[in-house]
Length: 465
Image 1 (cartoon, helix red, strand yellow):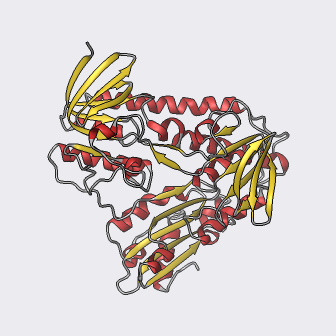
Image 2 (image 1 turned 135 degrees about the vertical axis):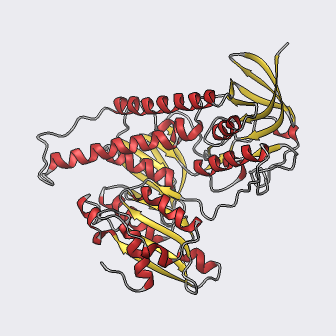
Image 3 (image 1 turned 60 degrees about the vertical axis):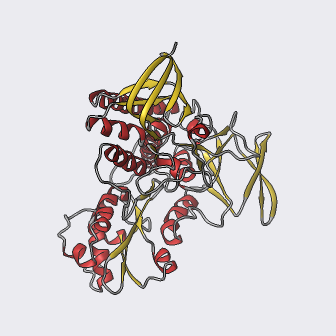
């Protein structure tokens, strides 16, 4: 007979949505079980956000050292180019992942959450069977939180396997390819493509739309495209990949068919919720347009069953999943909560980085809003210049209503602008107006001064522009 567990809260999936939900439920004194088939941390920690940022950092360090070996800069020169070992970089990356994975396990233990390793298959809405190293376990729960995350989408002509990689395989290569074709110029494709280009790989990017990062406006993406062009990354826009063989990727463009030499092909055309294999059909849950429909409290159509994160729709971001997980745990504990953020930040860790929070000028116009914008370039920011980050076309842009100056959106492109996202979100969540930001004293010299100056510019009196 399988072991039987009865619990108040069952969380399926140990990613940034699931483990946060479980920890918060445990903190609130709820008997909680978390089931995870793989390692704790999910896609983001194990084979996504964290490992990709680690390799991006390693690639950036390598690129900088190679530049100093080619010519002196800032009084620094190297007598010979650095030697790069991708295995060493991957091992360093894996060490970071292992440390954070162990940290998640420790936090769950501290919150008195029982972790069951294995794959959960639901028999009905409130019970599942788990097959794993502990043997067969049957779990019955009063409340269920589904947090099974998402998976990369393959193309019919480019199924994953061999030399055709998803982002997960690309982060664990044993050897660098001489050439890499990246299919998809969204944030995942460009983040990894730029990192490999910095490592010395010949990178080609293929995108079906007519420009890179099509979800962002052209003014934000132009600095990224210029970096790609300056560093020899070939772009094929308005092109579709049709197959791979004999070391060549076949593509179709408006000018006709052509083939691109490539040792490896990285497919990054999107992600989809992981819906299959869990027995969701036995729970009475019917996905709509590929996602599980939920209300403002992440409740599904079945009482006591919640879904969070990538399962419930865009944006498919780790921080959204974490916020929903924390909220659901508190709702189960009897607190009054709803998921109604004023803004969810989106970041591209490209070169340079892009941050977008709230509405862009185009978004506001599409909603019929009359807005004013303020822009301040990093070329006029002292801290950016001291970081060699003033010449990449970066800027901060503020979008506000014309009538009452309430800030609707903030965007930035430039070196390290991801670290400004917290200030941007705070301004929108707290319903700040332009005068609020303009009246704050921002520390000098910092990149944050560009936010201050952009607000001043929208008001018509920027000091340093």
